[in-house]
Amino acid sequence: MVLSSTLLQRLRSPLVIGSVTIQSRVLQAPLSGVTDRAFRQLVRRYAPVSMLYTEMVQATGVCHAQQLEKIMDIGEREQPISIQLFDCRPDFMAAAASKAVAEGAKTIDINMGCPVNKITKKGGGSSLLRQPEIAEAIVRTVAEAVPVPVTVKTRLGWDDDHINAVEFAHRMEAAGAQMLTLHGRTRSQGYHGPARWDWIARVKASLSIPVIANGDIVSVESAVRCLQETGADGVMCSRGTLGYPFLVGEIDGFLKTGIVPLEPTSVERLRCAREHLGLLWQYKGQKGIHQARKHMAWYVKGFEGAAPLRQQLCQIDAVEAGYDLLDKAIAALEDATDSDRL
Image 1 (tube, rainbow, N blue to C red):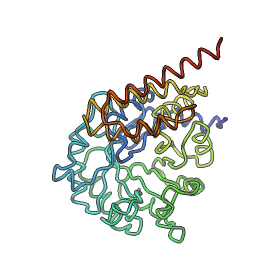
Image 2 (image 1 turned 90 degrees about the vertical axis):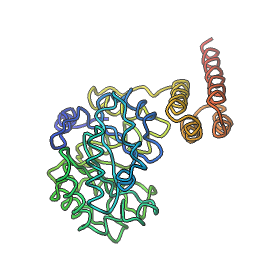
Image 3 (image 1 turned 30 degrees about the vertical axis):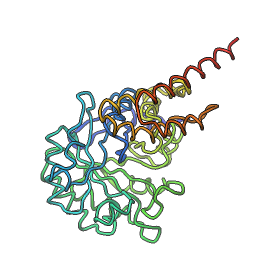
Image 4 (image 1 turned 90 degrees about the horizontal axis):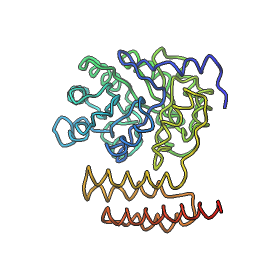
């Protein structure tokens, strides 16, 4: 994996987002139902200076306090952190953004890329790609309302017949966006098919604000290829971090040192899963145990006996049951490793 000296020099310098300077070019994406405080705590351990994001929050919920806890639950060591909002009403977005800044957000990220029907039907997410005037008004209104940089996360377009990424990105920059993250798929693609990094390269070449590449960033190698092909100012990791909170730190470490990190062993991944389970229990109680099931399924793979263990972990109702299953699996893997050494 080789990057040109010019590109490497740029990627080793801080990422400047308006008035905010971040000491890493690798960002953890906001993921609904995933990037809560427990998950962010693990990512932060391996990526101490990367930008983290809260889960996506609807502005209406923040204004009416139903979802205020999602942005208030920020730990002391989580900075730098951004809060991502979605809605189609500029005034609600501005009010919610002001509350988010009061809770410690370093930037306000506006979601204009979520493809999920329940979001687009409300006029949020990627539906704004078909309403660029409203998208522009949202960015301008929020940028005028808060003292921190406003950023946008979006997609290539609604579908293959309506790819408007370059034009849309220009409008966001003109409205006051200080950074744009571009997912290299259309809304109709969802998460299927390869991300089209060539479009990210076109957008990067046409803007003066930082452009962050998103889509198919699942390893150090894929991040390097993406940066080479797009010339982007950084990468945002999303689904590649499911059950793998090491990824952001691995990529950041390679960009800064040129050293390819060793992948965590199955035992190390299971120990991380155990800690994640405990954090979810600590922060959320029984609700956290139920949420932990999907995380356990993401962690448990790649070793003999993973499938039955995964099935058992997806049915746990108590933290002790999860600990017991994981402790036995860890012990079995360690015994097998010791036997191989004899």
